[in-house]
Length: 83
Image 1 (cartoon, rainbow, N blue to C red):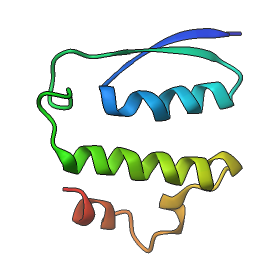
Image 2 (image 1 turned 45 degrees about the vertical axis):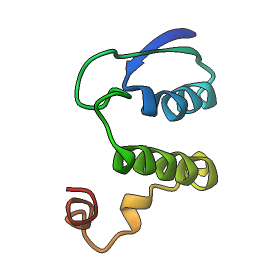
Image 3 (image 1 turned 135 degrees about the vertical axis):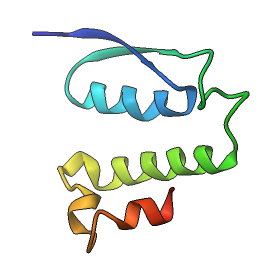
């Protein structure tokens, strides 16, 4: 079984990704990417707000196994909110 991982993702996603791994009993470290569309220098407030909201949803209901997307009337709504 895997017990230690290095998560490589965009800087804004590191906190949520590490929290999710830790909740599964996996010791995690994050190595944020330095290039790409969601690096700190390239992304805007929209993505920062999206990740902050996603983190709050995860720590309030996601840890209990509730998937917010399962309770939406249509998965298509996600593309309307965050194109």
